[in-house]
Length: 257
Ligand SMILES: Cc1cc2nc3c(=O)[nH]c(=O)nc-3n(C[C@H](O)[C@H](O)[C@H](O)COP(=O)(O)OP(=O)(O)OC[C@H]3O[C@@H](n4cnc5c(N)ncnc54)[C@H](O)[C@@H]3O)c2cc1C
Image (cartoon, rainbow, N blue to C red; front, top):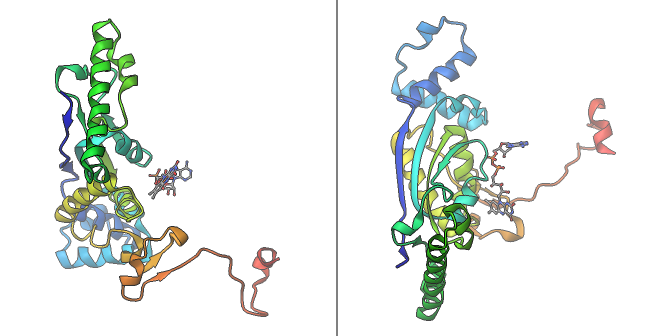
């Protein structure tokens, strides 16, 4: 019988010394010393200084040299679809074409708002059980898993391995830790952020939605309002600005028209 899945977020592996690698890359930009000298152990304090410098300036391409691999399970196909929209990444997902899901109870994810009402839970559970029954029925009739899966809902559980470099994880977490992201991918992102901060605290010192990292919310009318709780926080709108009267450099004059 179909049953609830449990979220699991695991750090499979990462670049062996992510902060050292990133620090070497940063140093390369500002030094002509031979590589072997550059690679000499950089003190913790120096690494922190270098990483903070690029994070503050936004020159974060140097953080692309460190990669982090996660295994995630117990998320819905709806959430995994949101995840794989992030293109600067590598993914390997459990195949619904080749894996016969009838051998175990069908795993699914119930949204918290459905759980608030016993009646809603009954409706939801009933749909999952009906989908599982239809899937199994089709297999019995000789339909392959790849075609039988068409009756499975968005709530169906999936397992995925995802690799991103530090910069891509930072940009991912900026969007998906924001309260505007949906509860499920946000919950998964909390687990990922926690593990990234443990593995490479300097690189991931300042991750999260822009209200927390920059004191700016760009969500306009959709804003959750959290920026109001941030010291110096502001809700800002992207708009065109003009040079002060008489200060427009000639090369920009065409943009001012
Ligand atoms: C709250 C929220 C609501 C959303 N709602 C919707 C929705 O209603 N409909 C919908 O379709 N999606 C929606 N999305 C998904 C969103 O549009 C993005 O697809 C997703 O967040 C991935 O972001 P990205 O493209 O910046 O990331 P990535 O694909 O990882 O790209 C990272 C960065 O690389 C650069 N880049 C990558 N590919 C290209 C390219 N081809 N050309 C130029 N630059 C590139 C860009 O600078 C980009 O920001 C939503 C996302 C969030 C967080």
